[in-house]
Image (cartoon, rainbow, N blue to C red; front, side):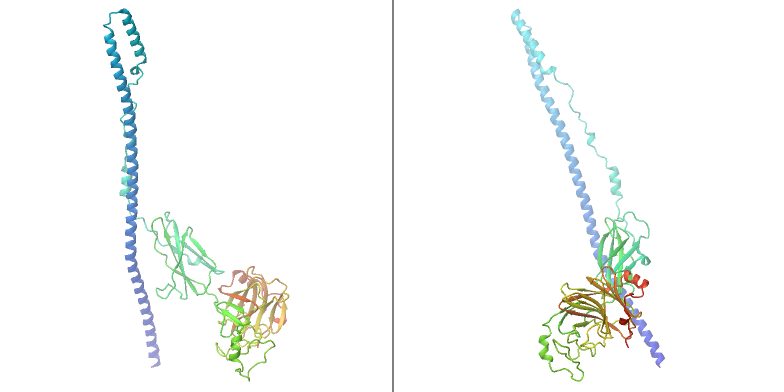
Length: 496
């Protein structure tokens, strides 16, 4: 009976998975159908625009050439009319002189005849008719403004749809995921010298494998990539994977997308647990700030409500009393002078990294790890269940590694940003200058329980940066160094 149920359950699971696949495919096909309609309308519109642009260009060229012919016609007409006018005037003057000369031939009086002959001679010498060029200034030839569009006509007749670039192929083996950057590398299945640029799209996901139609983030786009690789930098890896796809574009058209690939971008992402933080701490997302007035309004509400049998004597200058257990099982709020907040995600295995940046005027803060069992009055580093770097800027600056109420002074400058590396399985907690990757200090221990990121802030605030991969430089240091030689044996322990 049980075996039949198990077999039936497997069949049900198989059918359910297959139904999900089919439904996903149906959603995909429906999107494709919708895309066909949308894209057809677009390419028709684009075709109209291209031909309208061509018509407009031809009209402009025709108008320009027509104007050239008309200008040439007007120029020749003007020149020839000027020449014609000059010749007409010269002819009239010459005819008048000819008539005068003919009449002079009939003069009988010698003196008058001599006078008329001299006048005729002078006028002939000055006559325009003898200075004219009797050759047309310009010809009637207009062949230099003739056109022959036979070659262009052949080109127009050969117009066809531009070949669509083939889909690129992403070379997953060449893609690199490191230091919160992703380098995507692709190639074309065959050479295409008409490609102008590439378009890369990506999106974060928690699902391995092919992208899903539903319940996914929108694709983000990087356009106008000239080469066949691109690096996305400064990413926050708050999802386990990222999908990538790329397509090639020529001057007019974009090709199909490549087959999408999924690259793992897993990194530790956690928030700050407001439910257990000290009441004098103001916690917002990844930022915590000491607020001396924050717990005052709670004081009257919780006063006298402590479980006296389990209460721990409060240190001096206690700003608030404890309050009933809240959040995460029996985890009480930190109280007294333990201005502490823990992360909301436990580390039980693996290698992880995060960074912390303090405000410039923060008087005191700590960064480290803690077991869940740390007491509500306990300060980070003062118990055998917590480890930290502590920075004190009050009066004079001190920088120390702390564990089990013992401190190791660090002879290095306090960095602007502290990187925290936790190798749970290897039993190592290391701190780095996040900018230079200089190793500040390393604890070697054996973690016997899940650990939580821990933070303390007093008179100021700190910001926590998560979703970070273990930097390559840190990985290299971990391979070449087994902890820090300066780690004192007094701070190296195996908590029970």
